[in-house]
Image: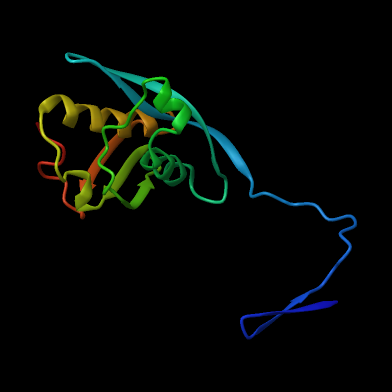
Length: 152
């Protein structure tokens, strides 16, 4: 053990031998999220593979990953997300009949305009959820309200 005095604080260094230690990462599963390539007149949905936490329900894990947006490498490939940065997932559930209900914060609709962007946001979320086996439809809400959500 060594001691070092730094600006009135004593910092103690303890040397330990690391034998047989290994880092255990959280379990993950493969999933897809949908990003977009946009042109002046078109939105192309692009499925992007991601590894998501197996500790969360899959619908929650993929939506949280979707809200992170594209990685730097994906941005260099021209991929983007139309979902506003201020959007947050409040809850998501999936019924036994395959209906996914995803509730977002008010940030999902903040500062968006144009029917093409609104449609693209809806398609990103729905496409991401519909890739999950067993999900047959998606209901979106904002702060618990479904009326007028992401309407052009």
